[in-house]
Image: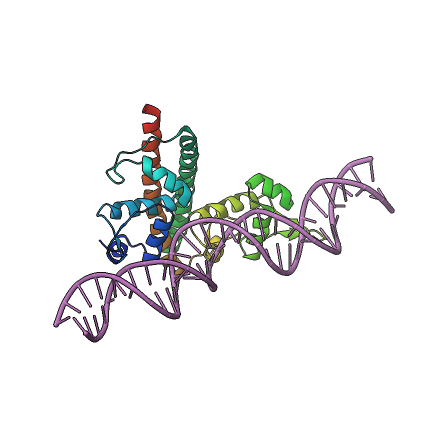
Amino acid sequence: MRIGELARRTGVSERSLRYYEQQGLLAAERTPGGQRDYPAQAVDRVIRIQELFAAGLHSRKIARLLPCMRDSDGGPSRIATPELVDELKAERARIENMMVELANSRDVLDDVIRAAAEG
Amino acid sequence: MRIGELARRTGVSERSLRYYEQQGLLAAERTPGGQRDYPAQAVDRVIRIQELFAAGLHSRKIARLLPCMRDSDGGPSRIATPELVDELKAERARIENMMVELANSRDVLDDVIRAAAEG
DNA sequence: GTAGAATCTGACATTGATGTCAGGTTCAAG
DNA sequence: CTTGAACCTGACATCAATGTCAGATTCTAC
């Protein structure tokens, strides 16, 4: 699939897809003319990348993480180095903390929304 | 309390606290010499502001939201305008969506961490 | 009153993903 | 072969919170 279709199917801009490739997050074949040709797997991968961005991981860390994920591209998944594991544990803790903060914020919004509905 | 203590108690930099004031998120009395003097309530308020930032709200929206929160500063809380309510509902949906993405990312990290522990 | 810590304002820098634009090339359909 | 859509690279802009620094002022303790 070409970049336009991938962008449409994932909701991610073409600009970002090219950026992901530049950061080593997303590989693509090239047509003889030089245009990107993505495998069907790319859709899932882009969605995962977006989720990891939303979770606050930076592209460099995602680039190291992706080869260790299973189901990422069907290829054999590497085992994370001990150093990476430590970093991922820290990221995990940060994510859990962020989820608590999000739940708090959601509850605050609910309070305000409810007060407006009642008043 | 002065800005240094508030920064220490909230983990937020002095720079950010001054920025919050500039954005109308955080009020402070002034000593005769012009230094900021925060009420004890400020600690909770700063933490809430941080949570709302973590939830992806921008300072302008937080500034409109804060007067409608109860327990924010003990003062009477305003009722949100219908327009604000609509925006808050959209933010709420975005937050819920982000929580799902965070849970997914956390699970991905867990997979990688577990694979490394087993392998 | 004096020394040192804390604070003030104002300005400029940083970050990292993404937007946008220009000028050129490739692709697909007639 | 031609035409318009889609794509290419490269460069510059943006956003919003935060970092950082300089030079001046205030506070606190002796």
